[in-house]
Length: 297
Image 1 (cartoon, rainbow, N blue to C red):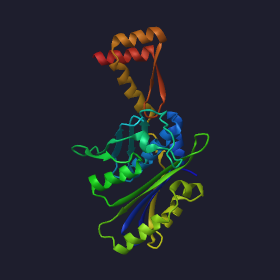
Image 2: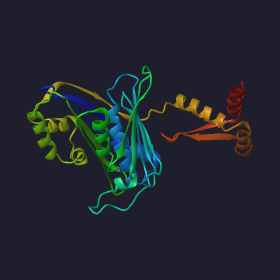
Image 3: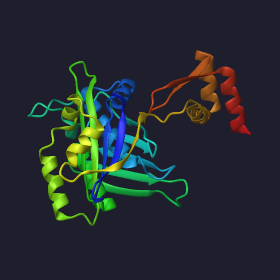
Image 4: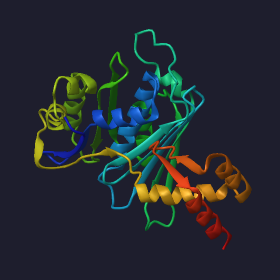
């Protein structure tokens, strides 16, 4: 079952709904970062939440979400673009505090209290839009939902879920973002609330084989789903190889000539790892010296 984001409207045009199935995407992120179970859940929720907030926006727009909490996960940073490519990292991939009293992963404790910052950028905009709210729960979905209400005045509901198997792999990961338009009727809002109260968890829905279209139909039951819908296939990225090489060359140049030459004498090459995708590139002596020469000119 591949990754998918489905965007739909209610039949009456009063509700916009995004549903994501991102099990493989989250698994790929956690594999690359070698995260412990609680860090996997936190990173997965942040990836899916940022993806839902950033996809289907204007071409070239990016959304960056940063959790600066005082918990042992030491922060989360995620960046998503309008086409569904998302990348992220946690400060401490091994963060895995004891389970909560109800036996669930304690993501809130791992994230801790602090500030949630969201930056929306577009190449044509004069400056990025930045909004910040306090981290209330650290459970990710609740804090992102509060941001949408407080900073963007969006009447919305956000649900995210990541379940972990005994071998620490991702069993299911998904979420939804509901935006209720200002002119929505009380009947529509009441029906939505009733549907959400009776809705199983996102991870259970996905584990039971429900597609994003199936979940959309459940959320909008009694309201109706419009015929027009759009979907995209999100992926973990967007670390393009050539892009990364250029950034890493600049990073190598910043080390300084003396340090670079010392590393080359000891190792004959320089290895640089991207903090988001964890891909490692090797720069041989001749290539590094060219970079240094270019930095001097």
